[in-house]
Length: 139
Image (cartoon, rainbow, N blue to C red):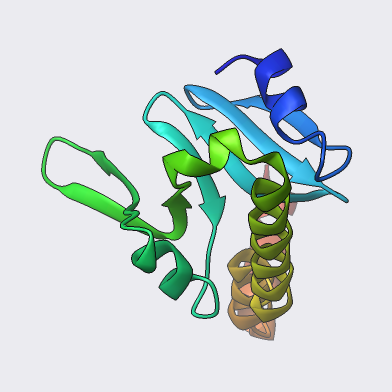
């Protein structure tokens, strides 16, 4: 799928931002990524609220293979093929995917790096500081 096709596909949904990502495009609205267009197809963001709709349509979650295993990404599900011909219903699914992405954004925790920095900050014993200062003076 090319950029122009995706723009036309989401016309009833509203303005979207389409950016190169992996082997395809990331599709976002209001700064939130809610869909992926990859060689394997078009995938919408899903969560416990929307996954039953995808399952009812016979869709599968996004998956890819590594050398060791197959990784299943349960947060993105393949868009049912019938929706490519129904732009009004596709817009409804896109709104649901955007809502799922917004819910996921609310659930996210602080970045691990920031928490790890706070955890590793310890008071350095005065003896060590004195030894470091003495080594600097000697040189």
